[in-house]
Length: 87
Image (cartoon, rainbow, N blue to C red; front, side, top):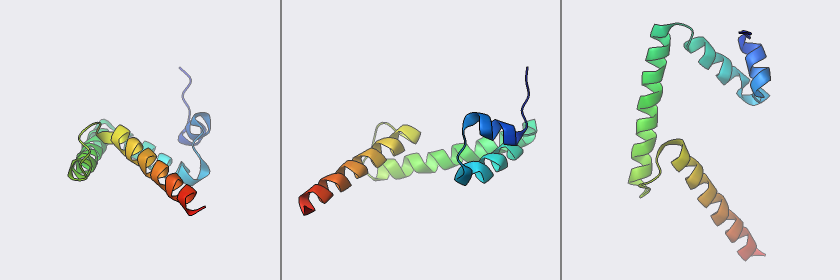
């Protein structure tokens, strides 16, 4: 198995320059099993908070990342419609 260092991994995955520092911090946070477990627990808690906010906003399904993407797409469509109305 060819192992990459974090910088090479970022390049191979096409991580954009503006997200590289976040990617490298995430890789560093996952280096040991204990660190990985702690970070996964933190991320699951954060995802739970996002799900709660989506539910409060009236979005029942889907939750998680897909719900955020759907919400962003709906917002984009509303903005595009508003821009067309202004013309």
